Image 1 (tube, rainbow, N blue to C red):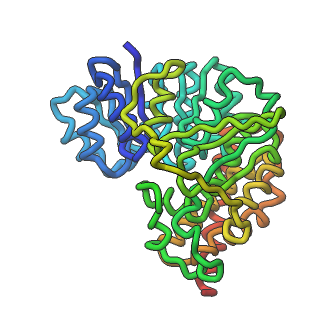
Image 2: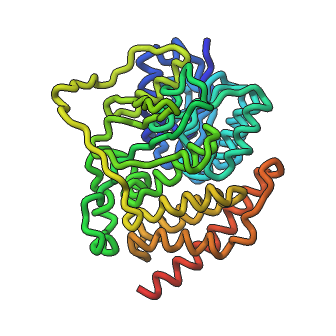
Image 3: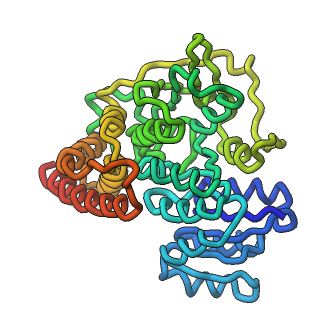
Length: 394
């Protein structure tokens, strides 16, 4: 029986992963080793009972008492806190979903790789903050990383049977987010509510705002470089409002392979779950005659400064990705709290990268988890300082 763990089970990706597991037989077909979640203790306990998990872990230690109460009599062990999540990753499993949001997902993913597991990676921050470290760890232990972001899953699928040296360019598609058609001069006044009105997707609050600012796509640009090993100038971004082409790969003979499908994350999750086979998935089938047309346009750099910053991070490498991601997360916190404006998020990130420029260099082969965590902490401190000054000047 195949063993499975899900880190970030109560988030959007985790919920859809659980849905696919239950459709495929649930606890009768899989041995569920560990489930971890955030604040939704009730849902975590419900999942753990239904899938008969060995252990359920909530991120906040304050939720442990409730989790224990809800799991009483189920035979599922309960634990809480970052250390408990890391310990859950030390439990061997054949297939692990890494769907914890943010830098917190890095250490559990690294620990899981040490068991030679298949890691389904939805936590893009792992490759952004520590790409060389993560890929080296997988190679060292004979583990496999399968991308779950719809864009990177599309690229992965387009490259099946292909020679990566024949790749000329990789084209990431982007919806453009909620504010894609706003006049540039109005963006500075955009509110949290405005940024959450995504035209195509129903996602969590943070990722929806990251879509509007294109910070999400900036992370994916860096992730593409780290996972596929291409040069920065081979990675492109194009606005595709319909969100039906998930990404494209261009080859040196001029051909372009495009991956199309309904905007449903269960496709890329299911592909990773069933790889190397393809199994039936409960996703909508496209009616091309009904769609009729697909449209594209180049992203405006003035509208999406995060894309320019991603280029700078790729040029620096070292610990620049860790600083970039940490500063982005802090800037988003301040925007959500009403302290800074929508366009000021990129200004905070850029200021952090400039302030820490002399400390970002690190030989790729010498990078450690402690280095990444240290830079993450330092960048968060600096980003908070810069954001507070920016808030006071508004």
